[in-house]
Length: 291
Image (cartoon, rainbow, N blue to C red; front, side, top):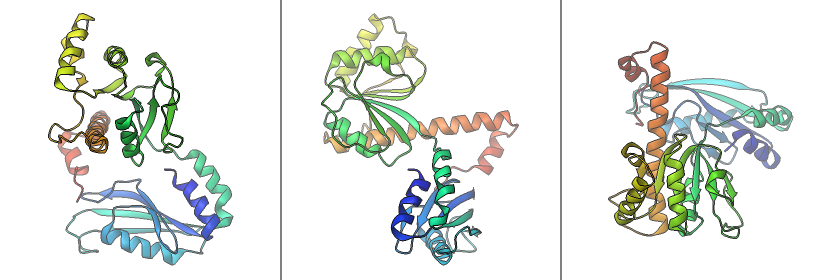
């Protein structure tokens, strides 16, 4: 979601609002740097983590409503200042807007970019639809594919683009989830993806039997064991046995979030190492806690 587009919409209906952004998060905090919430006279959009820190931030922001061009910085130690068990510190920026702010907000709408992991989902059946809806509020840019032009619903989430095409039409890499109506198309997609390193995750819906048959065919097609090991089938949790589309979708979403965080952490670790920050220093500066 683009916060500045939402702010413009709120101004049209309510006249004023405030944007609260985490500009710094150290130690154990409920959200990371960059998280935001929009505060109005009657409520809010988004979240900076909930709980006491969010309640205090909302009060600070509502006190600024009607004071355009006002920017206030607030720093809170979650333990000593707010009585929280967390040991972190958060620094917040609070900006207030009214109708006079719209021109600069329109520029910020254009310039705002959220790093979204691209996900290709092949298949617009029941599970595909459930998965697309489950991914809607999460930081993924979804390309939804199906060879049947009438397979898609009339309305889709903002982070979804629908395509009718062929496996070769996928330009971007990222994550690939395969759940089409055709096992022949499934194999074509798996075969293509395992030959292309731009796909960081290749997931195929199916059973252990389907996996065994696909592995046999992949070996016959010339794939080595390293390439075959990249195939995840079945996808999702091995603990959840429900075959309800929404349950399968929830299970797959957890798996995609785990993959995404692992890749982001790996990228950050490499960048910090290149900057001369050791692994032990990284753990001290960037603890992976969500208290």
